[in-house]
Structure formats: structure tokens, C-alpha cells
Length: 184
Image (cartoon, rainbow, N blue to C red; front, side, top):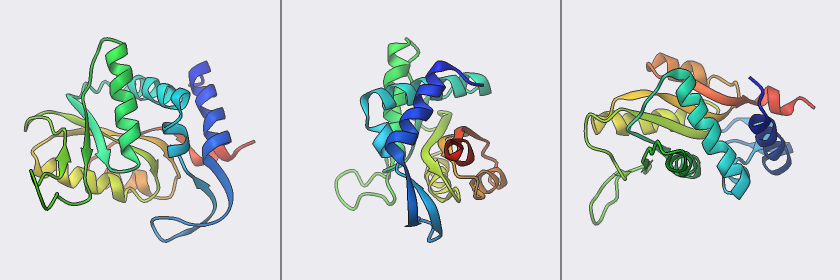
């Protein structure tokens, strides 16, 4: 579905986040393009639009999470954007952040802002490639007894992440696909 909000966010993603060239991805694969979505999710308008579209995706899927979050660092601005916009729209959803490993000091938490056990959550991510970051966040959430309704990704690179998540029982709603953003 194309809306003015979605069209504007696509334009911002193409202008600020899409880079062409030769890149090595976190998965170790090489690519002829790179999506540095933090350039968009940390941009004032970009973050606001991301928050709106994430809430639209939740409504489309019928997901009513008690919290929204994912693996640091890519998910952090996405979760916060959705949380802030949810507050502005008077349907607040708290954000949480999943560390790659539990802190070795202080509270020794792996999940910052963790909701109480039993709270249904939606995982978010900026770019889904293999699904590894989202699966790592899912593992921490399951260990904390947080049922996972699904995941929302800003961009699905269409490189197996959706399928990897599905094998673990996690449905993915992607706001954009890489092929869509790469089309001129």
C-alpha cells in the first residue's frame, strides 16, 4: 500500500541510507549496496515517519504489544521512534533494548526497559538480512518469558531473513524491501 507517508520515507531512505558500491555486511556477505538505516532512523522526520509506519504495520497485523524493541544498535532508534509516536497518538507502547550479552556489572540485565514476564512484545529491526539480530533478540525475550507476536523490519534485504524468522515461528512485516528501494 502506497501512502504519502510511505512515499516520503522511501525518498528519505534512498537519499540518506542507500549507498551503492562494494560492501561487506555484518553477515560476512558482500553486496553492491548498503543500507545504513541509522541515517534515516536518527533523522527527525525519518524517525517520525518510521514510528507512524510501524504503528500502521502493528494495526494491519492485529498485533497489540505491551512493548516493542530489539537488538541494540539497529533496533534502538526504531523502537524509540515507534514508542514516541505511539504516545503522541495516545496509544503508548513502551520500548525496550536487548543487549548482545548481559551486562557484567550493576543489574546484569540483557534487556533494558524489560516489561514484566508474560507481556507480549513485537521485535523491530532496521535491516533484516539473515534475521540473525532479530533471532538473537527473540532468544533473550523468550528467556525473559516475553511472548513474541512478530517482528517489524524497516527494510527486508530479501536474503533469507524472513524465512529464518518463520522457521522460529516469527512472522515478519517489512515496511520496505530492498528491491523496492533499489528500483529507480
